[in-house]
Image: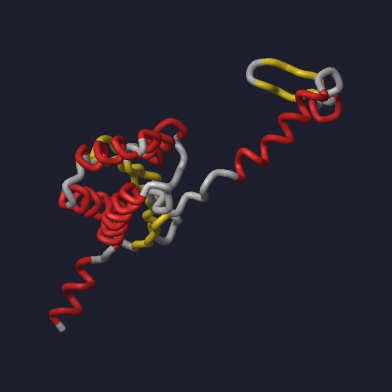
Length: 177
């Protein structure tokens, strides 16, 4: 039976009938937009590259370690989906990284920033090129010291994304001309 026609909806592991619990349903609908509107929009830094995926990953690893960050994990999401489903799923990679000194400073200033650890960049295949994206930390908190720190970290994140996307062979070929 179609849930929409009967007025049923799922709520974590339970089936409620809208007519039986209208006040709960209305309260939920009333507070849903309010809770989302108060959150900050996450900013992203993004670049594209026509390099091979392996070259982007190598350059990302180099850029991360050159900025005194440590890679904490790499997720090969596209490859794993291809292996499980035996289809031609595009590449999706996630590289997580951290600097313990910056993490310590962040957590001393604003403990809720644990939700931003570790930092990450993603690489996704569009079919014609790769898009490298990284979420940036909020720079407009109520804590001026935290804002200075996140601006510094965001600068490093932008450098990592740009370095990962840059086609170094083209740059060197242009310099030799």
